[in-house]
Length: 255
Image 1 (cartoon, rainbow, N blue to C red):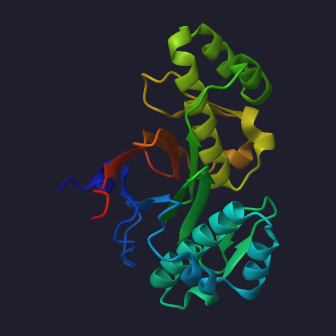
Image 2 (image 1 turned 180 degrees about the vertical axis):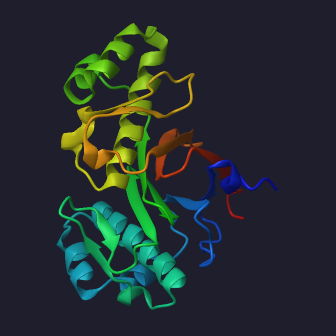
């Protein structure tokens, strides 16, 4: 097998759940693990995942009066705590998760293990990495006034590219731009206030990448991007710091 690390790349290993929901604690800096979770069929029962939460997280979950967001939080945080606990060799409830000023959850005192979690209607994605990592997921759907949203949230350069695209490419370009920009922001620990402070490749027939960065908080050691679409029509983007390119490898559902 090609050593992608020697070539400056990172292998992104994707599993679709329900699947064997485990991670080798010895994984290298040239590997990223991503799990795509069907929130209606989590790989671990929701009741068991609730017991993995800290007392504070359990209170937070119970504050949700509607079942759906309560279960989404419980599943995402419970699965995350289980994975991190395996990597650190500790119980899920003792994994030291804290938050940056931006609200991004990180591991306290564990600078060599990074994670990110995202979810949309019915789908969650969890990523683990030895480098800073960010993920975003969106269900592809018809959205009115795409050009207005691009003008409001994207950069001027991206807006010019978007307006120059054929009509048939614009929906894909919007979701490409939104998910890859969100992934970079989450990886950097920034906020959506920085959406227009960097440019990504919008053309859906070209590889995703960061074209320019104007805010030093987003620069880091450079970002490699990748995207893929699930069978349910969700677009997923991932950003990994300090890699030249990403090699996405899809696992078998239920493997």
